[in-house]
Length: 355
Image (cartoon, rainbow, N blue to C red; front, side, top):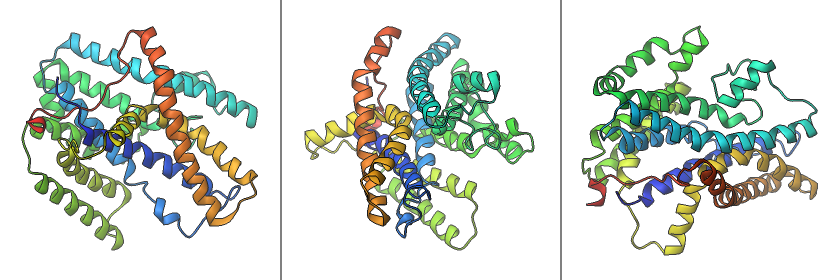
């Protein structure tokens, strides 16, 4: 078994915390709380946080599952393990948030019985019709809709080398055809998120077992970050292209840190990083409730203005992290025991990274 990569653990944790900070800032900036602030630009990471998540997910799926012998039986086992990991905790978060929504608002924003089924099974829903993101109640769960589809593509690729080759070589062509389609489900397939996930898969397939100089990988990352920054400033880039550019930059970052185990880092800090990484999924699911309550608590304390906004963001970040760690340590093990699965599926370095 390859050694666990503290570098990939750190990236996984950072991606999760960026999501928390972004949502906490957006919520605190709402008129009913503290309104827009001059420092809001510090938290404008909406085009950065998700490319990091998807490219890392693609890289891990590729190195852990697609670089070894496959077959339909292993593909089915992979999907079962993913389902056991994703759905139970998601259903718990959905249940808690649904109850809170009924108490606060008085109703649930589901589009009939079919809307409930789609929400429970994380089936794609049109953002223009459902909740603004395509995921009612637990609105960041739109990410999981794409992740579920991405896992399906990985499972198909595990069935045969022919299907894997088709995914590796022809998925960008599907993106070009489907992107911007008037048919919503087709445009879902042509999403930039699935293409960024594909970036990670390709990275794992072709460079997952190859030693790459850290300086070269970092240079790659810096160049693409600069391209995104300059073209955005000059108005030469749209949102989708900016996110794709950041995805390419994060490919270099992953190569640079995958074997970086920080031997000089104190053991305590390393344990915090690993605990946070293990708890990233729980933090992602439960931070929405924390963000809403956190802003209300700060407001109830009589605070206002920029200071209240910053305190809200910091409070939501710390409490969300703590809740995620608690759920990971006390709830997920019980779910795992009940479903007979491993509690943690952590990022591992590639063989070349451990040499």
